[in-house]
Length: 551
Image (cartoon, rainbow, N blue to C red; front, top):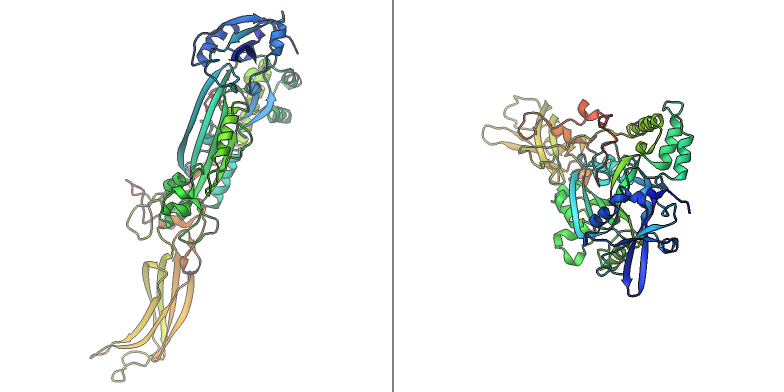
């Protein structure tokens, strides 16, 4: 094991959990701001006590102490585009002996209060078994808020972003985020942490300037080590579920997105514990149109623990897997929350530092995406239209009927004032209609004494432009009609659901009828120039330096 200078002397925490058995845990000084503030930091992180008893340990004692769980995570690189740890260390978190082959050993003051499975000096155990939820529209959800707060261009290569992006191309969705988390251990790096030998060697062969000819070499560095490194981490575990519910299909089922996501949540609810009206939601069944793909889909992410997939059964109580996962977090922790610093800050050469900064900024710009159009808002009293411009019921459409002409009419024989083969071309805009009803056509002969019914027929209509002939005992009449299904409806009688993304759907046909609240303007146009702009990046000067948001 390599030896560092005195500043890099390792600190340990002694945890006497079992009588007559002392257990020591390894901690590198790279995790501390500086050697003089180690005691202060320990007293802050050990929230149950502010006093630590420390002493200098021999090499034998130091070598016998195991590393704390997850000690290597704090030194890893991180890619804010893919939202993934690179699993390659840029910070040396393994060196623990001083040049004199000693280290500092500190007693864990929580020894009387911790179970034997808790093996960390920085015990900051904070478990939140309650479900935390956030609701977003399909166009309003900033995926990076799910995976990394505060960065517009970040997260565009993450699995969560890919899930949301794919769903948004298929239909209008409302997304909700549900999570539970436990944090057990905390680490913090010094302001000048020692670098790993491998990272140093990579920097030795890195060009001093970033341009088109050197771009690939810098991209290799980013692909290996990421864009940032962990400054501080809290370790434990988190279960997060991103639920996508079809906004307009929910409306057709008499639901709103909030009710759907509240019912589904993390999937912990069982059928036996919910109201009848919610059973079909849990079963993911559409009652209004029998749409085969269901009301909702989900993306589940589990970090830390024993490999549990994060799925619950709605038919039986299988919470034992969830509880076992919670227990396993202390032994197999992962990053729950973190604070990041730009990778370029670790580069000692000033020319290389500026070049790495430029390369990372270009990498983020290359992965920027278009902004989504705004969620529409419809206002008015037009039948079958909700405030979000979704239909309220299936089997509705807009109907226009034209009475084209008649043939061989046989009316009154007393007066022949009009033709027996009239050409009318009379158009009737009937507006919104219930397409489950028949269209009734009648032709009457107006007489001085009493009107006579010459032709009568009824016909179920189908979407599109069609012509048919009504035949009666006293002649025939040719009828033409145009039936347009309401948005998100299709099929015979407009009774089937039609998925339609916001950027291409036909809710915009309602624009003249439904101005936005407090304005005479129509619903916002997704194709406006403002919405076609690329996601804005933060000011270049402070762009990477401000990426310290916890997520």
